[in-house]
Image 1 (cartoon, one colour):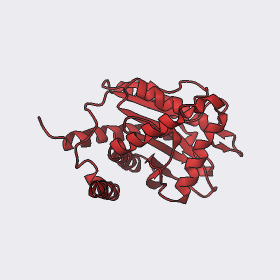
Image 2: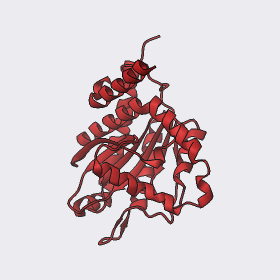
Image 3: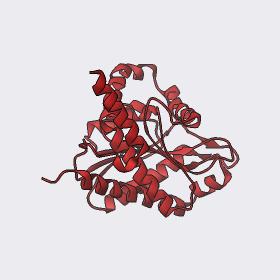
Image 4: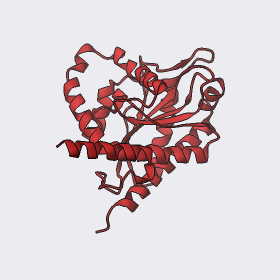
Length: 262
């Protein structure tokens, strides 16, 4: 058993370093993609990140992008799109992943705005991992996971089960999630004049237990003056939506090209 574990660990390490080979093994994804869940991060009593000078709230930006992304995907005529929230309401983190699992979604995309020191800017995208890429990624995960503070105490009763499902999902979909991150990041760099901070990994609780490829998108820094102005711009949000849609389609094409022909 030890050699098998070493081989699997080595493969995952190589896959993360060299994304062109991410799906060299048999993929768990069934094509064509049909059901996509878009998660607007935070909501209701959970404001998320906040720009004190301009009063911009992350929950509102996330919802605006999620709604437009849903419409753009539906216009393609080939996807069934579901939103974890369509209005300003609070939803526990585990409720979002449970919703996606319940409908048997093929992809889960969680939309967020980043926050940090005022000079930090740009786009970055994450997939789930117990170990963060770097200290900044770890700090961001802690910030996003702070949404737990708004949940009722009894909502944590299934944490052990969710932890088990999370581990299983990571093992099964880590390559697909990483590939989706890369195709979206490539599209963002193509469609927007926005610096990319790259594809990263961290322990985001909203991705725990998601039984499908899943990513968390940090569109831009709400705490940065220039980025915050972009986030309030409808044209910027539309271009971000366009890039995410392109990334999803490129991901689907990539997975299709790597699957064996019947």
